[in-house]
Structure formats: C-alpha cells, structure tokens
Amino acid sequence: MLDNVPILSLIALSPLLGVLIILCLPAARGNWIRTTAVAVTLIPLALSAWLYYRFNDQLPGSQFTEQLPWITIPLNKETLGQGQVTSFFIQFQYKLAVDGLSLPLVFLTALVATMAALASVYIKKRWKTYYLLFLLLETGMLGVFMAQDLFLFFVFFEVTLIPMFFLVGIWGYMERERAASKFLIYNGLGSAIMLIAFLILVSTAGFSETQGQNGISLMYTGDLNVIIDNLFHNPQSYVSRGDLEGNFFFLSGTLQWALFIMLLVAFGIKLPIFPFHTWMLKVHTEAPPSIVMIHSGILLKMGAYGLIRFGILLFPQQAVAWSTVLALLGVVNILYGAVLAFVQREFRLVLAYSSISHMGIVLLGIAAFNTVGLEGAVFQLVSHGLISALMFLLVGAIYERTQTTRVDELGGMAKSVPFISGMLLVAGMASLGLPGLSGFVSEFLAFLGLFETKPIVTAAGALGIILAAVYVLRGVLSITYGPPAKGIKEMRDARLVEAIPMIALVAFIVVLGIYPAVLSESLHHTVSGFDQFIRSFAKIGG
Image (cartoon, rainbow, N blue to C red; front, top):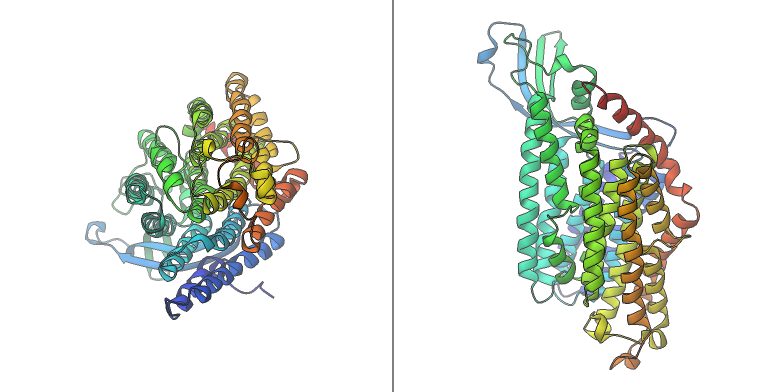
C-alpha cells in the first residue's frame, strides 16, 4: 500500500502536520494540545516500523531513495571562455534515503520522540509553544538521519538547534538560560566548522560535468553519491585538468587531512568527545526530563552518525591512520566519564557522565575498523539511546514526586513505588552491561572488534565496565533501598501515562538483549560493506 508513496518524506515531515494543527488550537486547551502532539508522533513511529519491516538487508547501498532538485544557483560563466559550456551552476538536492546505518536510528528517533511526548506530562506551562518546538525538533532529527545531500543534512541539523535552545531555556530548571546559551555556543561553533568543511567538499569533490544536446553543463552539488564517486571512483573529475572548463579547485592530501580533522571536531562536539563535553553536562542537569530523553537518546547520536557517514566514509585513509588516536579518545571518554560519575551525588550528573563514558565505547567500535567493531558502535548508539531515554524518564518521575534527584536525599523507594524502582533497576542493569539486555551486546561487540587490533587499549577501556557497575549500582541501590528519606512514604507509583513509555523502552532493551538479530540483520550487510570500502580505499597511497 505504501510502496508508491514518498515514505521517507512522510516520516520526516509528518510532525509538521502536528505543528499546523496545534497552531489552530486554543492555547488554554492543554489536553487537546498534548493529545494531538502524542498522536502525531505515532505517525512517524508507525511509518518507520513499516519501513524497517520492508527494508531488504541483502541489498547493497541505500533504499527508498527520494530525489528532487531543490536549490539551483546559476554561476558566472565569463571565465569559461567560448567553449561548449551552456550552464554553470550550484544545485542542492532534496534527497532522502536509508541504509542499514540510518534505518535503526530513524526508528529509534521516532520511538524516543513518542515516549518523550508522553513524558511531557510534567510540563506545566506554555503547552502550545512547547509542543510546537517539540514537533519541529522531531522533524529535524528524522531528517538528519535520512538526508543524502550535504546542504540538506546541514539544514536539518540546524533545525534541531533552534527548538532545543528554547526548550532548555524556557522549560528547564534554575540555570536553564545558562545551559541553553552554552548549548547554542558549542553546537553553533561545531555547525560553523561543519559548514566550512561541507562547502569545501562541494566546491571540490562535488563537481560534475554533463554532456547534453545543448552543450556541456558544469555543476557543483552536495549529493553524497556524486562526492563519493569523485573521491574514490573518478578522481580526475575533481582534480584540475589545466583547462578553463575543468574544476578550478583541487582537493590535495593536506586539504583532505584538514577536512577530516574539521569533521572530527564538528561531530566530536556533538558526540561529545572530551574535552568538548562541558556543555552537555549543563543540558543534562538543567533541561526538563522529556527533553533530556531526546537529547541523550537521539541528539548525541547525531554526532556519531555524522562522524561515521562523513568523517570516516569520505576520508577512510585519514581515519585509519588516526585509528589509535580515535581509540585513545574513546578510552579517555570511558574512564573520565566513569570516574567522575562515581563521585557525583546528583543522579542527573551521574547519568550525564555515564553518557560520556558510553559514547567512548562508540569511538572504540569505530576505531576497530572492522565489521564487528562498527556493528558494536552502531548497536551501542541504539542501545544507549533506549537506556538513557528510560533513565531520564525515571529521573523525571522521581523529581516530580520528591523535587530532588540527589542520591543522598533519596532512599527506600522500593517499598512506596515498587514499579518505578523495578524499572530503575532494569535500566541500571542494562547500563552496566548485564547479559540478556541490550547494553551487553553493544559493549561486547565494540570491545571484541577493537581487541583484534589493539588489545592493550581494549583492556584499558574495559576498566570502564567495572567502574560502570560500581557507580550504577551505587546510585540505583541508594535510591531504591537504604534508609527511607523524608516524604518517601507519601509517594504514589507510576501513573498509566508514565508506565506506558517505561514498559515500551524496557521491552525494546530486553528484545535487543535476548534477540540482537532484530537489529544486527539489517545492520550487518551495510556495515560489512563499509568495512570492505574502508579497507580498500585506506590502502590507496598508504
């Protein structure tokens, strides 16, 4: 039924339908607005589930491709002489597609967005503005994982910054304005670096020449396939040929290194890689829980996705040469995050530093540069997205009842709120990598992949797993057991609107832990193709 419809556009743009409906609703009708927003988030969730079902994991490359000319900018032809060139322009494409890397992240985004919309029951003011920004944020996130044009990717990427800034700054806690400003400064800097790198790529590797009936058309484009073809399959198309009708720019080896480092920094800020992490700590502690679910569960994954899609796959030779650097950065993330998580008394900070540590595991999987390691990295993105979303959903439930999330001010919750306590225990076990839950599979694959090439670095990173068990168990057990804190007996357990997203997230965590093939089957063929691609072209000039 959906085979002949633009399914990816429907997924990416369907939240805007909710924006239009909510704009027409009275601001005082909070229940109407909330119900509309939740219902609209179910549309991309249902469509992405259908997309996952229809995806053929045996086919190479991207699937469900949608492409239209979007922005065309004519360029000056005076310098081209009197040749056969009839047009000279820049063209950006509205091009969407998914493969085994992006498909799980699209589904994860739709799932976490729906769960966060349900968790937004804690929002007490300006519901109309909140849900308008929320749905706009979802559109940006979905578009990021499907965009196949550099400019389109940048537009979707930037769309996430604006609503996130206001969602933190208006509905956050005491230092929300500072957290929002820090978020915007760091991510704006990363976006500026990424934009410069993309412009250089478009003006060098984005060059193409088409022979038509009316003459030759010269075009610069952000189409990812054109750029990959020029970089690896037809290098003479972007190297200056010494005539006026050739490309005027040259992507030298030094410039390729500069672009790789720029993309590493740009997406490293988003990931985040130490020392670009301080902004993330403020967001995790000051943003409302529903927004932190999205931030930790999805937005951090955009950094890893961009690093793999643009940094690693466009510059495999440079990436492989820096594999040890990437692995060491991963170890630093793991140990730094784990050690500081261990000494925190604020549970939100424990989870923030835990996210830094778990993103280090993603870097280790990438640095392995083999199929197992890359699978582990992507598996970790999905697994951590589910676990962190569940954790911050529980944090929101606890804060709503106690007005605190300090570990030393909580205790004895297992008796008064057994359901919430049980969910917190499951989330904690998944976070520390207990077998049978998704965290174990992702960590095992990432470390196994890196052990093949860097056993010593792998052993150092494995210390983070031990520390994770310590700080997770310390925080979870202190909250659920121990001496009961004042006011704990008056607490009520999870309401239905809270229990539904908790159960849903736990279900996916358990399914991925018990039957990881649900994810690995769609992932393996794409990742093995990446591995062969990297190994093949990393040897050029090496």
